[in-house]
Image 1 (tube, rainbow, N blue to C red):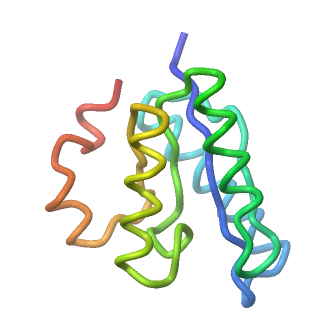
Image 2 (image 1 turned 90 degrees about the vertical axis):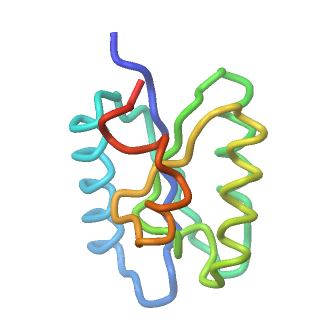
Length: 120
């Protein structure tokens, strides 16, 4: 059985329901390609709120899920430093990894152990 992975999408002000649906599909395609089963997607619908993020972290921690996928680091936070902090918190709490469907160069360089070829 493939390990579960949960997704997280921040419905930024310019994202409509169709765009969120598209991002959900991207997360599902990533999960399959990386050898996971997408178990669900937490969507933050209110700008500047963290209810879905908190629920994601709590759920993954309680159910021993060790992998989370987001479309880009901007979905954690639009400020790179805060995005990194949020990524680090998730990884520390769940004891696992945050994967990016579309990583930027800095994420690829700082996280070589998280390449698709090393997916659990």
